[in-house]
Image 1 (tube, rainbow, N blue to C red):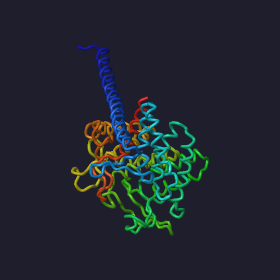
Image 2: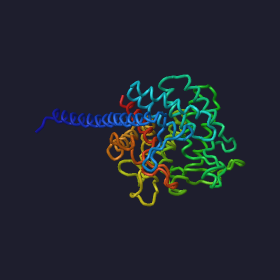
Image 3: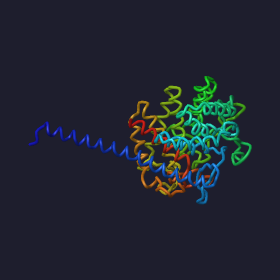
Image 4: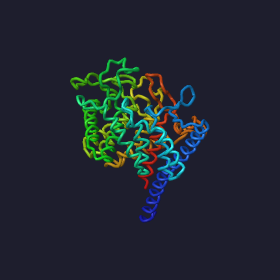
Length: 398
């Protein structure tokens, strides 16, 4: 018969061994993700430099890279990815590249025609300022925040997302559409108050978050994509979708934007109602009956042909990054879910082999199926949030 002390020693060794193995797995997906991202983005920059221009890669169209201008809503993600490579590696070459590509989109600070100036500037200049304290970046962020708040509609208490006088949006009969994605632009306003001391940015961000909390969510804490407001009465006119399967379906990336946005709102305000909704959104996503085992969602949780529907790696990456932060607010078990997502994204099903995938990092994302646009392609924001999630995981490991 085995002595008790020996039995307990063996159990302790087994537990320690399992723990060490898990730790190694976690370290492996971080180091491997960084390594692949460095290779892919280095190839990408080499290809861009051969043109003699500074180009900003977004996705693929007909198997060709689509490059975008500073005014495109995704223009901040490639510079932001460069900043995260610098953050993750401390290699000065990535700082140099990040500075070069960031300054190329500086004119975006004057944009008043889009709510996405928050995405554009915070992901690029925001990360640059966080890592360098460059006063020019600070000035750009404040100026961009001033542009963003011109879209605030006092009657509705929200920042208007899309313009309604041109493009496909003009065909919907909307007055003041507010989309779940717009929660992501509030971080720039919170930052602008800290940088300038002007509380008006903070107040507008809180007003928008409160209205979104009030009107965007169903009883199961899934969120509508679009809520249209009446600019005269301030009342809700309609709750619909633009990029989801149907008005009452749960568009996967919309849920991810809401999760991330309210997590940021809690960080910046410490208001428990934002933490509460973030946790409930997380629960809806994680426990959804149509969530695949690897936690990389189908493009819409209610798409009609599941499991034969495209997956959206971009939604998964956003979820992982948000869950890592949310795990630090009293829910440490959420980090394990984020690890599961990142393990999947770091595997061969989603992480590109160096030199393939037109030098984007992740494969298999979805832009907008209803618009027949960017279906099962790489997207620069999938890469950005994947790198951000790696940085957050690395910080947690420390």
